[in-house]
Amino acid sequence: MRFVDFLKTTVLLSAGAATALATITVLAANSESNSLLVPIAVGWWVLATLFGLRLGRRAETSPPIARLLTGAKATTTLPELRPGTTLINRLWPLILSTVLAGGLGFLAPQIPGIATGFGIIWALAWRRQDAAVAAIEERDGVRFYVRRTSPVRPMELDRTPGFKALRVGGSPSTGGAAT
Image (cartoon, helix red, strand yellow):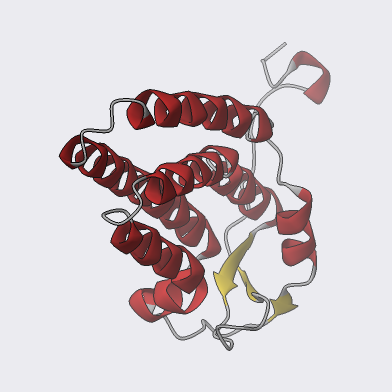
């Protein structure tokens, strides 16, 4: 699976998990007639949104992703493409925490309420990373793929040849405009 696609999917699944957990929180609080829980949870979600927006404001790769890209192993063959297996293999902590928090939500609705905030932070903090990696791929003429590893080992990437973007236009000092 391409690393850019993995990053996009991670953001979407994190946002989806946060939405599902928020729904469970509201439904569970409503079934218990807990009028205080939802306003407190919404306050936490607003803080989580602000924090996630702050973390994800930069357009360049984050330090962990930069290290991952730097450590990518060069290969000339395309790796095995199994996106479903790759997603489950790498995102099992997200899946497990969402299922556990959602399941516990009907016993203690504050649990999915708290977990929702972390899903929001994660989705917003990583929202621009796929574009930053795509820019590096275009600049360097490579493609990064998620390597198949054990679910408990750190992620590894393969670097394959790709297409390098050649810009036609003016000088760099004019921002590419013709002079």
